[in-house]
Amino acid sequence: MEKKHIADIIWSRLSAAPGSKPAGGNEKKVSELKKKVFISDWEARKLYNKEKNEIAVPSNAMLSPLSLDWIEYQNVRIVRN
Image 1: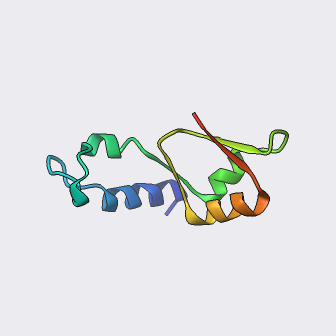
Image 2 (image 1 turned 120 degrees about the horizontal axis):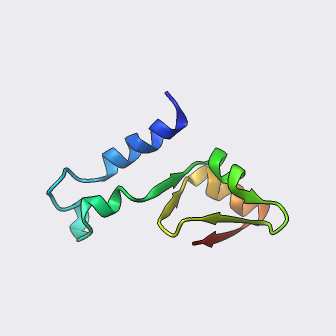
Image 3 (image 1 turned 30 degrees about the vertical axis):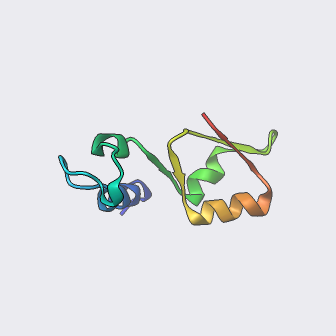
């Protein structure tokens, strides 16, 4: 199994079935939820700009807990596009 498949599995579990409302009363459409991006620790380190000490990620990106720990430890700034 590759890392890109893990994000697909996570989003398939988090999103509701097609045509139904997501759990928790959230009114977003399922198609909007699938557009989100999951960024793992490995991907965050690849996106890291050493010169600016920042990571540029899409505005709808979801960062993994491990990547957030690394970002906090390194005191990296997150820039959402």
